[in-house]
Image (tube, rainbow over all chains, first blue to last red; front, side, top):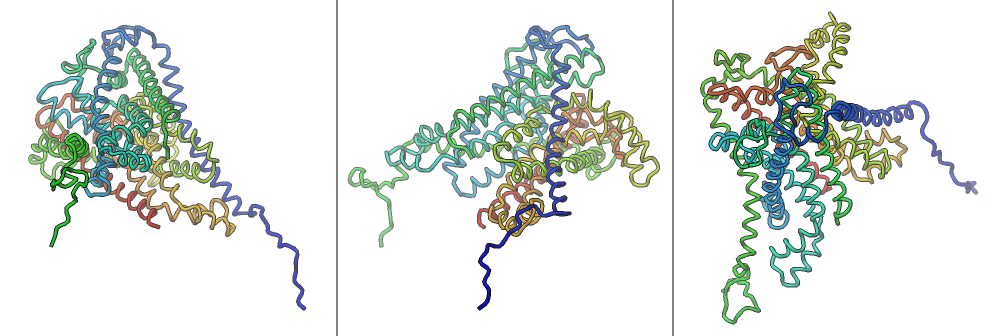
Length: 298
Length: 326
């Protein structure tokens, strides 16, 4: 009779030794290193902006005016017109892009389904997110500014073009997560498709949609290139967003950054800190909305 | 013979109108409204192409293929845009070379190494890079980063002086503003998008493949090379192309740090120009033929980025579809 060993086989569960283990360790450390390589510039930028910008931030800098010329020393005038311009223009762009984008996403998810037109629109809106922002500026310059002149409205059009595909994409992702049972339940009660979409599907997805919209606003508020040829360079507050030259924070940073004067640099840092603060607040708000209100998440 | 018509059983007797015709007006108009908003994307893209090309037509017709020469002197009405195209390519390639290994590394770190609850804060931190506005990168780039880089450039240039290949690439810097500075800043800016797309692609690798590799005794690195990489190669290429498209179109940060000099040189520490930065810096004072030329450079940039994005999205989507089918 053959001897059958009944004791369990010992399996070596230790990490393989030698070169294979070393290679694995090296690879893991390289991955950690790549994350560190991202933190360094980010920290560097944030520390520079806060250290150099904080001293110039005060109430009259944020709300006062008129915008001083680039040769003026620090502390003269204020960027109130630019802060107001940024708020006006971004708000107007949001009012234009968000309803259109959400409706576009509704078409893609609720009506388009799998037909070729919806596939084409979805694909092209993804492609449109990759169109350089300066092209939007040239486009609005061509179709609007050449005929009606510089205005905050033109800037809002350009930012709206930029936001539209972002809103479509993020809203579409959120609508897709809404379970079909909700739709079927309301159809069974006799509701029309439009009513189901507006009263059942949209409320179910609203948390995610709002969060996507806030991120799109944060992106648009920081954009300079689309505004460059559209809103001009006003020095005083222009509260009429629909006509006349206006100004915005990113434009002020741009014009001050390209000048060698210390006063200009000081104003540039102050404006940069203000702009980053606006963008970060919007992003944090988006995260909070996601955490608090998003019912369905990926 | 009878044709099938869907008759509403609850409708008034004798009604032969089909159900779809009996939808309330509000319901139908909502659908049309939604469709119109969807079509808006296509309309805007077509309008961009048509209107900007019209504005640029005089440049295209006056210069013909001379737009691709290096003959740029606005004073003499000569607008060959090759130096700008060259700068666009060089800065984008530098950005890609620096950003892709880091992005893929972070994507692997997130999907394969760190525990799930750590992944989220890391993603937030990487996404912060994308929240910092372009113009702030530019401001920091020109006032802090470029002067600091200039010292390093000088050291490198001293070190490689006379060495073949490296010598002509890394010569003495004029200032901190150069192709290379622009490339580095672009690398920071595109890292978030390349990371998030690569991560999406890598996350679709089936767990069973990875477990199979581990079961055969592979280390984590061997598992990544054997199971993750073959699956996600295509998608990562798509992500890299999208990053390239972004790097080519990024305007304001580059306009501030590239040095603003339309020259073609192998010398990476030299000041240069790229298409978007040229448009941004020169458009304000341009008129007539000059403006048409800048508009035309915009059209070139638009066409280039559209092609790159269509190809990249195509690759990413095909990859995703294959994964779903498998």
